[in-house]
Length: 248
Image (cartoon, rainbow, N blue to C red; front, side, top):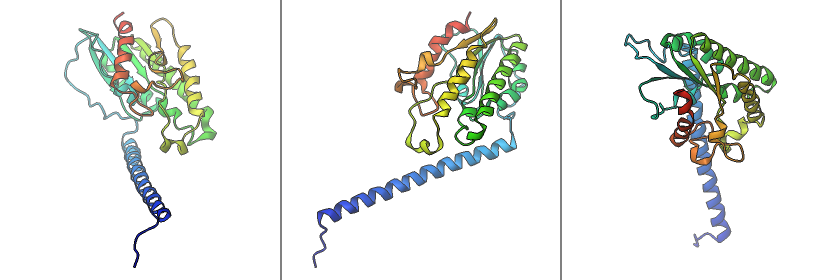
């Protein structure tokens, strides 16, 4: 009996095997993503504002203080090594919207009596637009209002405020395409235009795209960690640009 396969059959087997492996890999990825967001959803239900994320400490904090505040992009922001003799505290929480960041301000920031507050927030509001397209205008409007309120509360502490524009996005990966829309980068530009109107006495607007974006308006590949986040080189570039503002 001749058990050898002819060339077309071999090609078919290879194609089917590749398709099965690809499908298995995609299913595993989707399972991991689903598990991550399921855990995040339930954690948010238990502590909606993330107040327990930074437990209160009786330890005396050396003044003056700079606070980096916002979502995961703020949480991942390392202290600028160009700045000396200033206590730098991070109060970012991954996955948070502007409403959550606003809601925990008193607990996580005001009590620190900061000299400067650096704000990076907004992308988690706007990335929800493809899921709730009928609420697009409300999502954008609420994002602007909440950022404005965060800046106001920051000013009320007596601090100088550095509000950064929402970081540009990276290259859209294939697995995100079914859950994405070109309305998101348009909304980011809209909110960033609003942020630029907040500049005034004691409020400095720091345009992150001037540091991070390439000629196509997305994060330069050398600074990209993933679609929504930048890597250590990106933060080093931001710190180099922002250090002079923080020591004024």
